[in-house]
Amino acid sequence: MQIYLIRHPRPRDVQGYCYGRRDVAVDRAEIASAALQLRRTLPDHVLQAAPIYTSPLSRCVVLARAIAGRRATIAADELIEMDFGTWEGRAWDAVPRAELDGWAEDVWGYRPGGGENAQAVAHRWHSWLQQIRRKPSEAVIAVTHAGFIRVALAQTGVLGPDQFAQFPIAFGSVQQVQV
Image 1 (tube, rainbow, N blue to C red):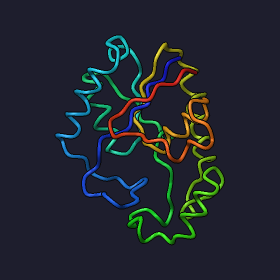
Image 2: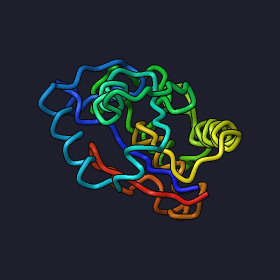
Image 3: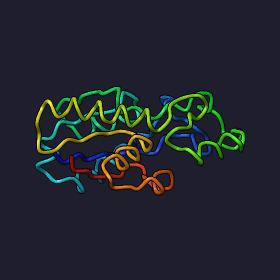
Image 4: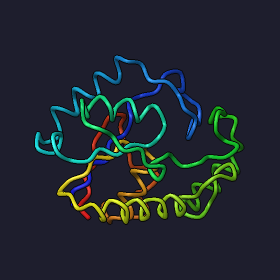
């Protein structure tokens, strides 16, 4: 099965902030631009037939609906962004340096802001995979978040453990994995 992991469009007014699971707004123009680019990027047969899953956060839902057209989308709680606990809503500059360093030293085990670690996100990734494998399809589209995508890439061997935190995931971009 080919999985197309799509990051949501750029949210509005979050530059320099840890927004994580906060439901932040995305401008309509950003949504339209991302949807247009995805229609050009994704194969037609995938756009027409692949199930479209989405994180329940609105920045993902609106893009999933835009690329789905009249087709239904499927909200999946497993696709939500990593929980950054007390860091959410704070400026990155306000997070104590020692905490950021602790996270950088142990991305898989450290719980930023007391929230989730990457290992917990990996558990959600595997749980979601089990669900989608029950409904066989050649391809699946998932509109989700950078943290979830990085974990999926690491869990499928696309990224090594040393690349995980630094790998860029652009807004509206597509990463493909074969499972």
